[in-house]
Image 1 (cartoon, chains in turn yellow, brown):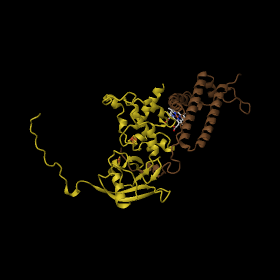
Image 2 (cartoon, each protein chain N blue to C red):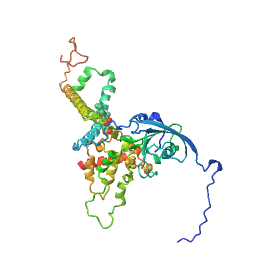
Image 3 (cartoon, rainbow over the protein chains, first blue to last red):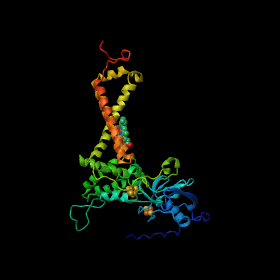
Length: 260
Length: 164
Ligand code: HEM
Ligand code: SF4
Ligand code: FES
């Protein structure tokens, strides 16, 4: 126990200038959204709104502003609004991003900001796509632990090194940004896709799991890892910064060394 | 993770999202797995690629850079090379690897771009036939090459090797 007396903290260290209204700048943006409303038309179209936003706002805030104040029919998914749930992956200025993690100030606000649904999955309405094909691939790689040994009375121990081995791929939030950025997935949608491989990787390299070989066999399929052409779109798209392409290569190597 | 707004760099923004209505979004993955064929093809592309770098660049250097350079290539130059079993073997391996590598690469592209199984089958049939004809013809040429060649007028081709 230290007995030194600590100096009292000063009340506030930040002086906000009156004129800036708290230091937050505002600017006008044009939001250009790909609309598809099957009740009215089979054709998709672009809608544009010019709105005033703040320097701290994200693309999601701009979508909210449109939906809440200008056009309530605009449809998109979002849940957590903080990059955790993986609901709001969309194609922003041609790149797959989470709307809730993309700050408007990081985009070129002198041009319209384009927002489209992620590609390769059937569009249901506006920015909402049918995620079922994506989750079907995910289910197929058995994303749950399969252990042969009987469950111990306490937890299953794992060394920090063994835990580190698959740490990167535990971070996936299943947003589908990677899979829907992959040109191989775009072609006919039968490729398992990066996300399924990332989540297989998470268990294949988990020392507590015993079904790695079964997952490798699933991914040795005609539509499995060998369709990957190392485009790196997935790594660029992942909002969690997962090294997706590297994980896919590690699964390829695991299949090769298992077969050898 | 920066996103910059340069529409010109992303012409794809104006393209329709694939399979929004056009192709059945259903899951069509066939249950009949082709064993480890795709794995073998993947390994072959890499191994043949490494071999082709050596084969092709030595081939280009010997033909176009060394000796008399690009001007040296005529019938006699080819005849001279194929009199040597090393170059016969070199060109044979290059022919087979490049054709198998190229044909397998085209197979990948057909799998990507063809949408119907029947289209795939047709394109692959043409591909396999084409590749087989070129490989067989090429192999025949390398081994049955006739170094003494006369033109239509009965004159010897430039530097053709004929018994005098
Ligand atoms: C110079 C040495 C070469 C190297 C190192 C090389 C390497 C490769 C590799 C590694 C791939 C697989 C790419 C992937 O799976 O993502 C590939 C694909 C391909 N290669 Fe080669 N290759 C070479 C020469 C050739 C030649 C001479 C041809 C034509 C006869 C050719 C035609 C193709 C085609 C059509 C593909 C498929 C492209 C695609 O997957 O989109 N390559 N090459
Ligand atoms: S790997 Fe990244 S981009 Fe892909 S689904 Fe998971 S979080 Fe999203
Ligand atoms: S809304 Fe949950 S990740 Fe963006």
